[in-house]
Image 1 (cartoon, rainbow, N blue to C red):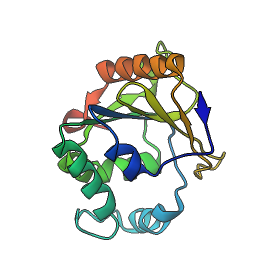
Image 2 (cartoon, rainbow, N blue to C red):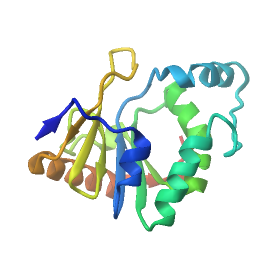
Image 3 (tube, rainbow, N blue to C red):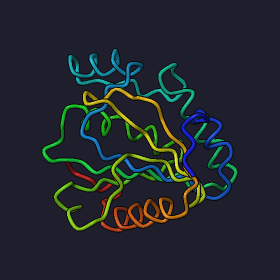
Image 4 (tube, one colour):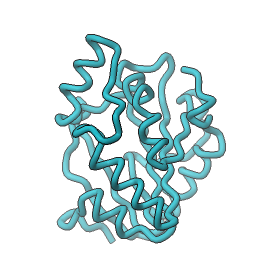
Length: 176
């Protein structure tokens, strides 16, 4: 079943997780409006906000910390083209904050993903059964998300995430 009319915020989604929250990112660039000023600053200076208590990070860091504190495993896998796009380098530059909050993050060079059956969209898979599809416009701007509890789609996401995870390099060891 797909439910595009009821798409919870990430706080509700992760607060509802009981065991796992898996996130697969497959784009080389995202055009998230809230990130635009920070991304432009990073492009100009090469520096990023790294204070987890800052306005930029606080919401996400608090959400991940309280999710992990309940015993929920939070994993993020990124499939990236190499050399990395500017946006992927920006994401990598800030990934230490995500990891310190409790996310386990891995990177898979796109050339190593060719034999993996992947869904057509980025997703969050909650407890192996609930999917939040993340949809984006051609320029990477987020569009309306979509929820699904379709067992076949959840199985595809779980299989894809596991395959990516097993081939990917942990953040601490990844060298772009």
